[in-house]
Image (cartoon, rainbow, N blue to C red; front, side, top):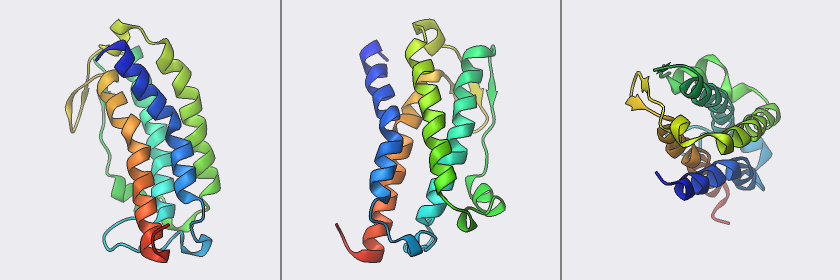
Length: 160
């Protein structure tokens, strides 16, 4: 990955909280916990997932840089949603945590050297895992969930 490609992905990563907030704008407040699409999470569950995932991912990239051959453990996101009661909590603190974790991580990413971007770790579900691998995943993560929130809103209220 080139320096310019990384910078574009870092910018996309930085935009994530605003993209999610925009997707939530106009979402019917009383419908945040409705599963409007069978088998898919509600908007509230998506927000809590983003918050928890962001905390985990922020630690992951730091471990990849700071620890030789870091082992990154996968987790069961559906079990997190159930056990951590994603459907029964206010989303405002989760959105703040999501935004804060990204705000703290973006400057860190911008300071990484080429050698640090290439450091290798191992993900228990994906295999070889580098900060560049991480960036490719998380630059798109919030955008994909924002799309999911828009589809949920459309299912509840019709397209906007």
